[in-house]
Length: 150
Image (tube, rainbow, N blue to C red; front, side):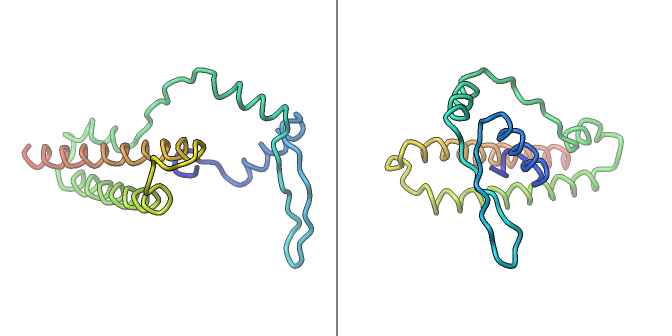
């Protein structure tokens, strides 16, 4: 999930504690040698019902907040070179992430039609990531070509 939802460990544990206080999760503490004790969480029946209700609620379109797009929007104010370098750097990063997604797809989802239903839903999130990266790469190529021809 780290590819599409960012959260710190501190934030995760804070939320887990809140969910447990609300009766949506339960936990068991496991003692460990030479390490701090760890908690194993399980979703309660109430938590399962809450999750199901949340899933079917409509959600808003996520706002775009991208520093690179702001730079490109005002890119005519600077020379081409630094902006082209920035675009090429982003292109490289999106190529790397796409390669990771493709590797995950090959390793875990090589036969999508044979997947169990829960795996098909996970595969759909991966496909969104693949399409997202491909879209960014296409845009980067277009932006680089356009700026070079200005």
